[in-house]
Length: 121
Image 1 (cartoon, rainbow, N blue to C red):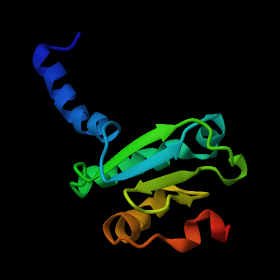
Image 2: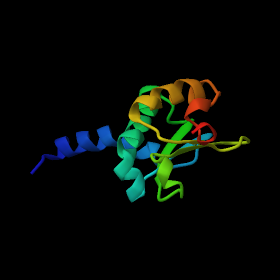
Image 3: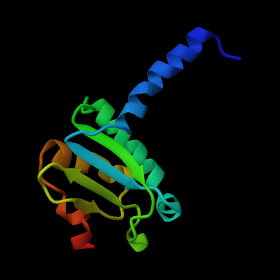
Image 4: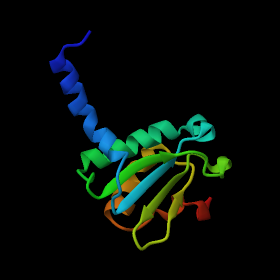
């Protein structure tokens, strides 16, 4: 059994990850985590977004969450990005390696990475 101090340390460490998956921010990153998405590798994609948002201190601006089936299983892993006042951007065949570029160019830079979107696949 863990001590109260150890449990408190674990709670604090995990708190930032839980906060990233809740709430309403200017930008919402939604990762398809149905069976098809998970089988295609969505879990590492979700984790990469959570880690990048935390690393870049963007938790006030960006919420990372998950959803069930988006309905385009042949393009999994699928990530949808919603921004206030803008059209939704749908990224397909995402990988954890592609997340860094999406974070840099789209989330921080404001310009979607066209080659990763559904219109280009």
